[in-house]
Image 1: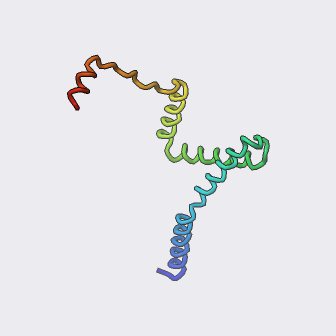
Image 2: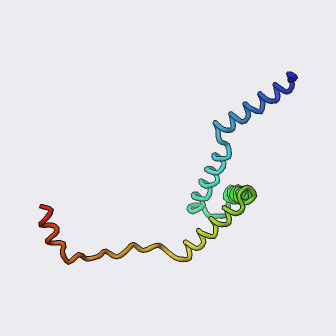
Image 3: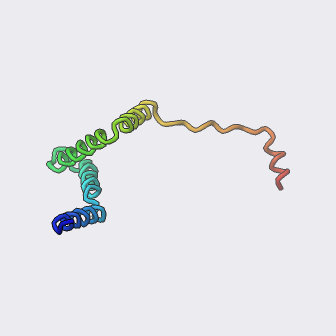
Length: 106
């Protein structure tokens, strides 16, 4: 190995390590969500709100390019869940023998 290859490998390793420790994409996503939450108070006309929408569009494009089948399946599931409304809990069943069971447990 040449010294140049070792230097390039070390630089790539350190860059990857630094990116893994600082997580810049996670911070960018957090920033975009903060802009969306603040838009409820300030409106959706600001430059930063539109910048956040670009971040979300890029995230969706990357997810769709990397895992297309899983992404589409999850999007369909969310759409169906929203259309069906909230799930209802099962109705409680009345036990006619509850008093006898309660007395037996004492």
